[in-house]
Image (cartoon, rainbow, N blue to C red; front, side, top):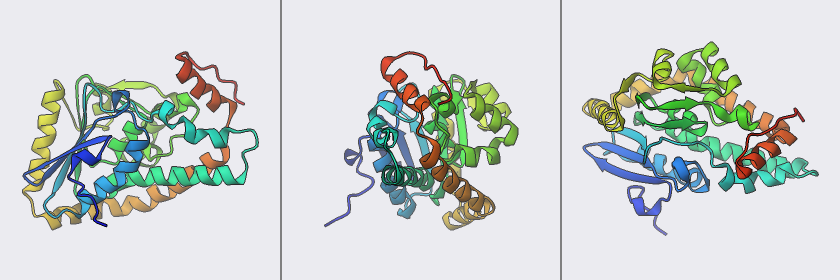
Amino acid sequence: MTTPDYRDSSQYKAFDVQIADHVAEVTLIGPGKGNAMGPDFWSELIPLFEGIDGDKDVRAVVLTGSGKNFSFGLDLPAMGGDFAPILADDAKAAPRTDFHNMIKRMQRGVNAVADCRKPVVAAISGWCIGGGVDLITASDIRVASADAKFSVREVRVAIVADMGSLARLPLIIGDGHTRELALTGKDIDAARAEKIGLISDVYDDQDAVLAAARRTAAEIAVNPPLVVQGVKDVLDHSRSGAVDDSLRYVAAWNAAFLPSKDLTEAITSVFEKRDPQFTGE
C-alpha cells in the first residue's frame, strides 16, 4: 500500500497545498463556513504537516485562509456528535476516556504545525476565532490585514481552550493580555493585536498581507535550511516542556469538568442561532 503524496491537494477537503521555490503555501478551505474546523480539518492536519516536515524541498510555509476569513474556529455543528457521549447523563469513565483521547488527537494536529521544522508564516485576514488562534499561535510568524479580528472565544461557548492558546499565548503576548482575552472572550482588531505583539505587522488588505507572508517565507527559504531548522529548534527548546505540560493538564481538566448544562446550552444556542443563557451548572 502506497502512502498518498501530501502535495496532492485532491486528497484534502479542508486544505489546498501549493509548493514553489522551496515554499509550501497551505490554504484553509473549509468545507465549513469561514474555514471552520470540522472532522476533515482535524484528520488531515497531521499528515499534511508531517509531509511538509519530511519534504527536503520545502524550507518554509505560508499558512492562510480562503475567502474573507482565516477561520471561524471549531465547527461546533459538525463536531457536535463528538460531544454527545460525554454530555449524556450517565457519562462516566469510558466516554470521558474517549473524549480525553479525542482532545489529545486534536492537540497533536496543532502540535504538528508547531513542531514542523520548516518555519510557518501565518497570513491572517478577517475573523480568526478560537481554534484559529490556536493555529496561529502554533505558527512562527504572524502578519495580518487591517480587517483582521481575533478572539479567544472558547469561554463564550463554555469551553476551556484546550488546543494550545492558553499554553502558547502567554509566551507571545504575556500573561496579562492572555488572561484578558481568554477570560472575556472579547474580539480585538488588528491594531490591538499588533500593539500586544500577537502579530508582527498590519497590511492594508488580504492581497497585501499574503504578499508580505510570501516575501518573509522566501527570505527564510534562501537561508541554509538545516541552520534555519536549528534556530527554530533552539528557540522552541526552552518553552516546549511548559507547553506540553499545559496541554496535558487541560486535556485532563476538560475530560473531567467540561460536561455541563452550560456547554449543552452553548451548543444548543448555536443550532438555534440565539444568545446562550448560562447558569453555572
